Image (cartoon, rainbow, N blue to C red):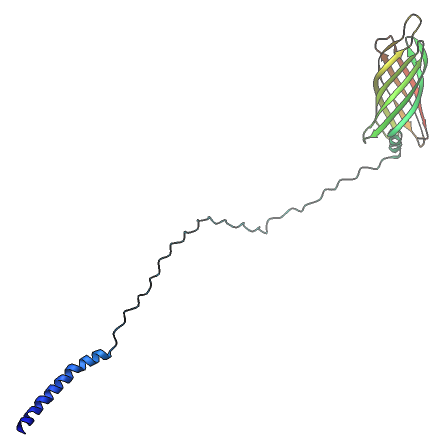
Length: 232
C-alpha cells in the first residue's frame, strides 16, 4: 500500500497539470472567432457643381419722395367756332353748293357799245374765311361783229357779313363773227374781273365789271352789269 500512497500525490499533480493545460484550450474554443470588420462603402466624391455666374444686383428704384408734386393733367377742349351771323349765313347760302344765273350787261369795244348776256354755272365751297366757286361761263356780246365766248372760271368770294366782294377769272375759247371783208376768227379768250353783292333776307343785288380779250383777233372789250338775285 505504500507505493500506492506515494503515487497519489503524483497523480494529483498530473491531473492538476492536465486541467491547467486543457482549460485554456477549452476557453479558446468556446469564444467565437472574431468576424472581419464590415468594410463601409466609401461614397464616391460627387463632382463639384459649377457656381452660377456672378450677377451684379440691380439697385431698386428709389421711392418717390413726398415732396415731389405731380402736375395734374388738364384736358384742352377746343372752343366751338363762333356762331355765324345772319348776313354771313345768307352769303354762304347764295354762294355755296350748285348755282346758276343769267347776267345781262353792256360791253364796250373799239368805241362801240353793245348788249351782253351771260349764263353761268358753278358749285361753291364755303371754307370759312373765303368761298371758292369753280364754274363755267358762256357769254354773247352783240356788237358789230358779234362775239361769243365759253370758258371755265374760278370765283373767290370774301364775305364780310352781308357784304360779299369777289374776284373772278377764266380762260377758254372765243369766236369773233365775220364782218364784211374780214372773216370769222377764233382764238384764246381771257377774262378777269370782280364785283360785289349785298345780301338781305331773300334779295341780293350788286354789280360786276370784267375785261376780256380774244387772242388772234382785234376784240378787246370791257363789260359792266348789275347783279340781282331773288329767292335764293
